Image (cartoon, rainbow, N blue to C red; front, side, top):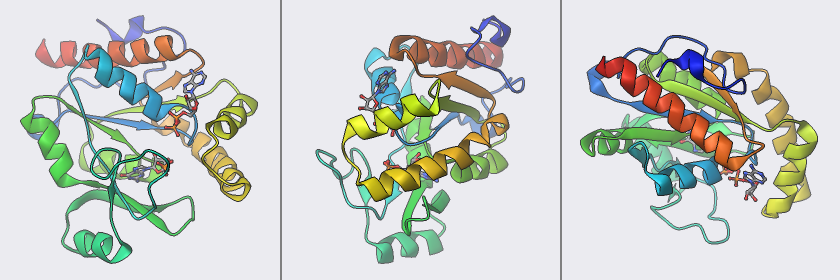
Amino acid sequence: MSELTLSATSSPRSSGRSAGAKGLRIVVLSGPSGTGKSTIVNRLAAQNEVKLVKAISATTRAPRNQERQGVDYYFLSKEEFLRRRDAQEFVECFEVHGSEKWYGTLKSEVQRAHDCGGWAMLEIDVQGAMQVVALYPEAVTIFIRTTSEVEFEQRLRARGTESEEVIQRRLQTARRELEMVDRYRYQVINDDLDRATSEIVQILKGVEGNSNA
Ligand code: ADP
Ligand code: 5GP
């Protein structure tokens, strides 16, 4: 399938022809917190139309609600995180949201996906995404957004997991992140979960088709 056949809400930014360095397949999902990235990733995993392995990020933030160690994140102390950073264990790591909380993608997670023969699915912020692209130019980058800021704010509040202060900080971060959307190869609008998920499947199948051709 050609990337040009994607629907109007998915905008290809460049050609994306191969599986990239050492055959690694990496897909990066970014977008403001609350736009539905985790929901989409879970749905993609459940549908299993393309083989995806979620790269579990490490973070120094505390678990929320039902989040589980080693499933949603590797929850690390700051000391442990910085030790692993200094040992070059991360593909990328940054302090996100100006919150003094660290987040990062472990090299071992990208390798685990490769060993399973699937795409490494990275759900990371824009700084991390740019770092991944610098290392792996063939990584497929997808920016998830809502149709409007109002919709986004409502969704963030509906989730009910953040304080007002955190919500305000995330809204500010979202405005900054939206300025980076043109650095992504694709953008997908998540106003309809089924459609957004199927657009991502089409994108990945398109890249797989091109690299197998
Ligand atoms: P993120 O991972 O980007 O921070 P979440 O996946 O946690 O966002 O989604 C934020 C909230 O929005 C959740 O309550 C989720 O159920 C809801 N949500 C996700 N996608 C949609 C959609 N297309 N329409 C309406 N609500 C959605
Ligand atoms: P949350 O705390 O809501 O789970 O995530 C907050 C932000 O951190 C989101 O924008 C998410 O994309 C980003 N994030 C999660 N994991 C990583 C990571 O491994 N690296 C980077 N750079 N950002 C991450």
